[in-house]
Length: 225
Image (tube, rainbow, N blue to C red; front, top):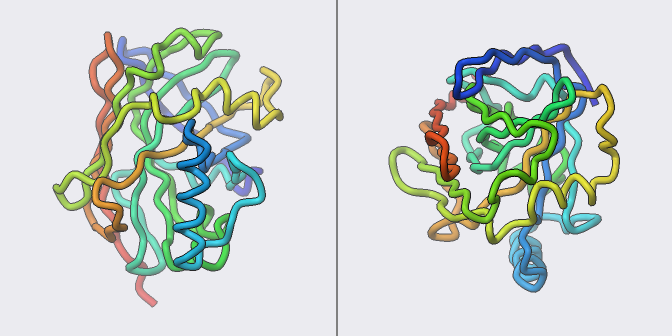
């Protein structure tokens, strides 16, 4: 789903530039490998008013104009928070990996998860790792992702607890390696203390063995009413 033309200019760790306009942006949710734990998490969210997903894992299609490399994003209300996620990019018949934030409106989330996913910009890092034509070349289980809210650790863990992104592509079932440019947010880690924080300063990190860590920070401003 494309609601605006957004050309992203990214760069590999070796310095090669990659510019493309995404035509599909997908945010995957409930991507844990432990199905019992995922079901328990769905129950926990339902208890605080978050609607249950139609499927597990869930896939939310959002407008391409939501993805940004800006270091400041603007949101509509104070109750929003980031989520660190591995981000898979498919452009010009090659796959790339970076880190991003599924920044989400937590109040709107209790009314509609798809609307909450679409409500906030989705910042991503400008540095990417070139995976070539096969995203399975990485040891996904060894990849560490972390996030900090206002300088305090918010999330941390390896992707071993999550479905591999290749599996998510298969489960989504709409990606056929065609000419479309895809951005897939691959799901997130549990919160360190289990409590949402509505910070204004966010830091995200993705640490892939054999590669320099990819890090980025962004700030949040609330739109004046």
